[in-house]
Length: 112
Ligand SMILES: [Zn+2]
Ligand SMILES: [Zn+2]
Image (tube, rainbow, N blue to C red; front, side):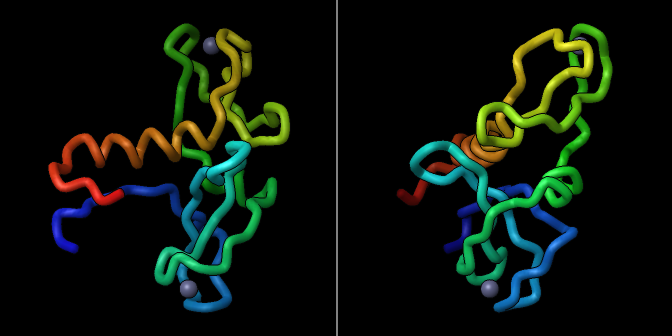
């Protein structure tokens, strides 16, 4: 499947038991929770621990006050929020989805 270019958030703090590869973060179909799967075989779904969520956190900053966003809990999900609370928290799942959809938009043959 060449031309199927995707990017994902990798959890480099962890290793899958099956392939000893870092798992990637994705949004669960129902509920919008973030989970992770082996980046090699796509199996062995696990939840993301708080420590792991901290290590996955990309460098994101607030456009209003330019402070780096903190990892917080929003409902039952991990999210990023400005320490000054300039805006509501952004779910980690939204970042994972955005990365994925960016790549789909640049790909003419999008697999379903
Ligand atoms: Zn695997
Ligand atoms: Zn801010």
